[in-house]
Image 1: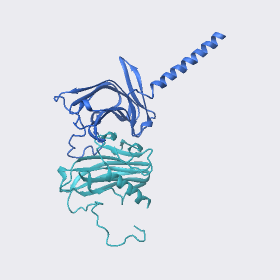
Image 2: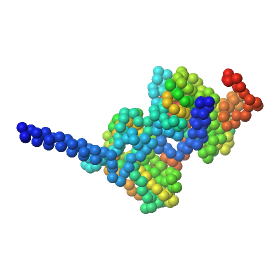
Image 3: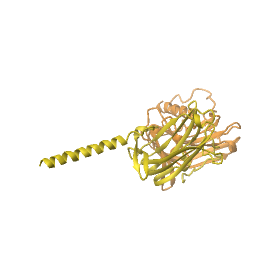
Image 4: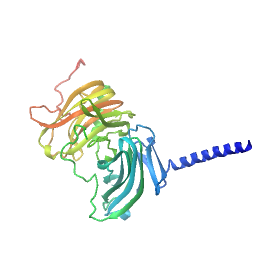
Length: 192
Length: 190
């Protein structure tokens, strides 16, 4: 009898412990923070995955009108005047309708001067790990940089194996801001 | 009065609109979500019997805010021309106002603009063809158009076309419209 009670207590304790561990992993990602135009609709956390650690952002409800992002910002000092590349493995689950992109931004006086959020090559639905890459020229006078993973819509996005490095002029930039505007309107029948 | 206020809000929201924040883009290819309260609005496409329509829906709109679905492109090929934006729109349970709009800019400042504030959608309405006609000045650099919604409800847009028209087609530009010669609609029958 005593043994059964002890086992039950042990079991309850282990469940409580596992619940606590789950809570600790969700909610914070050291060095990163949650933002967006609807951050309260999203949760962030870390997880173990095949061959290492990944971070995720997930929507708390099946329908979220805004976007959430897992991000960090940093001083651009050592990257000024250089061409930099952000690479990572990204996968998505049940992001429908919606989209996911990795993003990278350079600012000056709180104004964006270089930016790419993969809007033209975003991930959606459910898709396995894929390599994503963003290349930006950091202007000489940039005073802030930020990067992250954006989820606009329901579901979950994960990323791992993030690499940030200086690359040569031979690597083409993917900057969405400094791209010329299209010469005519597009997708007027909403078929794309 | 309420509609006029809402229209003024939508109008002012459109006039200060900056498209330099592409992170707020929605999920309609080639189009993006914007406005003073993009988080309060949802956008997407929906396949109907007649084809695919885009929608803009106030899900949890903030009081006095607006959501927009828009695209913008270079004005170069349209300078000196009179352009007409035509589309079919319908709405459901729009409590404040919804409308199609078009703007012609130079360096982020509007030169020509119409947001249908005098013929906007409200309540629930079946498909209706709407047109906006603006002259694109020689100094214009960007053209923007789309639909806008203020408050709860859903607005759909379909069959969008953008064409040059002749000088016989009157412009609907709200910025160019001359003041009326005298008081009007004093009996509120208009």
